[in-house]
Image 1 (cartoon, rainbow, N blue to C red):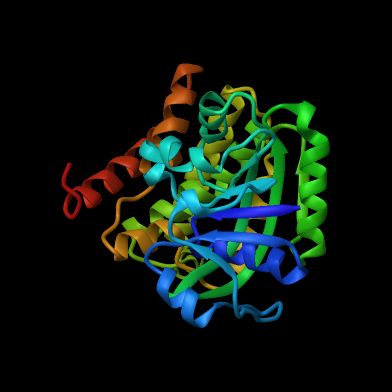
Image 2 (image 1 turned 60 degrees about the vertical axis):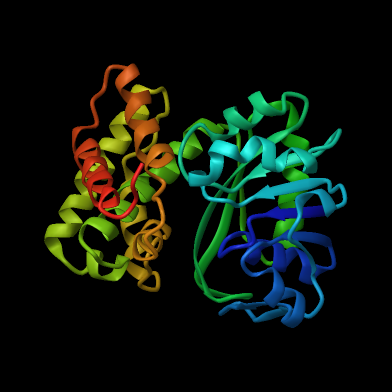
Length: 305
């Protein structure tokens, strides 16, 4: 299989480098890091083994990239407003779109833009960051959950999953993509938002009883919001997620890094959309809305509309 990574950041570069190291043709689209990667290559520092791609297929113009079987969309949802036009040159007959974004409703958007192409959702459970231009630091985890928007594409989902597994990426295949997105929100809603609101990392949040209580309250709302929307997530998932976070390397989630860099945060897809969907089903996510409003207030101090 051939791949194109649209968004060569902490997530896209990690998974793309793993696939390239296995021998796949992987095209990387980079803008701010293009010159550095062109001259020095792409490096991933990882407890699972470092990777250095000396001469990766790196591009800074989407129109120069040759067709690929799969496009990994790893751009943050804050860039989705103009994404259709930006990504269109990469979408050919049969091109699969693998959406590695956080939040809710992205796959449906991609399908509306490219109705004839397979769309697959990827929920990434990974702690990684861009250390310096062209250098990604993978700190912990790295598993990915894959689900097809249309079950007719499950065979393609399985094939992509096999290549990830061979590239040392643990894969879980799921049948209900909508539920899987809500399940990922069980982590994203509390930890991304609280890391900003409390100016903390995951370790500090999990080592403070009062903040753990806040996490539990938000997780309970996500479970109830999901249930209202027809996604039944077992209550035990909350305790598993808490333990998962407690034992992992202390980590500043992507929203915290965006806040520190004074970039827009992924409020719409990670908060507005779940809140709206749950409200449409008759359930009010009040604590989640309060956290969302705090994030909007904080962001409003450094991002002007």
